[in-house]
Image 1 (cartoon, rainbow, N blue to C red):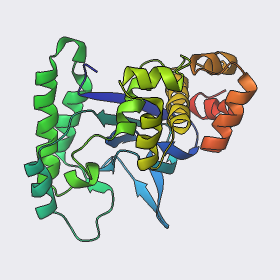
Image 2 (spheres, rainbow, N blue to C red):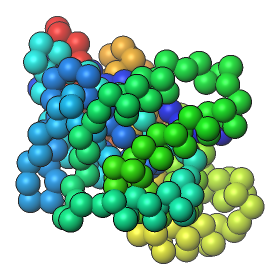
Image 3 (cartoon, rainbow, N blue to C red):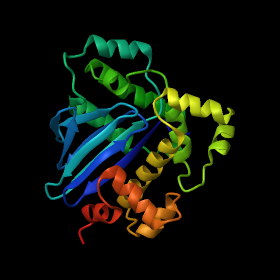
Image 4 (cartoon, helix red, strand yellow):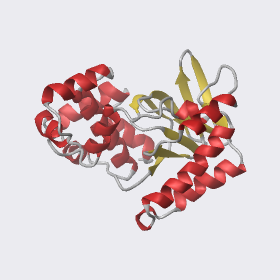
Length: 259
């Protein structure tokens, strides 16, 4: 992993309802146009361009993207950790009964815009880390950073998902992946069980999230999507996708592109 963060764009031309979208890295969602209706606990929270949605690692989101002409958002996923001092600063500035939404301002928007515009391929990891830590400091001063990072440790399932995401279409047998991490099959199963998950579930989440990204990038052939996400059967892929997100791949494609 040469990058300290990743930016992904999401768009919709008509209402786009998804459930159980699993995030494997701490992420900030910034709305550019339209709004997002987040189903959080027992409430529905509307997030607009004047706010940022903070998502801790392993968060599972259910929401509806609502175009006002068009929906567009950026998701910033972070692969480096803040310092303990930043987390403590954030907690000292925290509001009571926090929700995972923070009011944006020009300073935060400017930093996010800079991170979006940077050519990471021509930046060292150290330079990227410098800029990301500037954002972390801003969030800490807002009392919001600890909502993004509930722990300053990276879990094994996070490390696993990042590894699998580098090549979602490959077979990724459990034994081969365990060998990559220099641990036994049983040790990997135990580690994931301790974190409340299992290998097959992490792999499915990574592959189906990859499918969302491919469709956002313009891939609208379901058979090809299945292959690119490691499924030999288009029917099996569609079944898994609908079971996870609540709509078929074809229905999701229709929300991205006006037919």
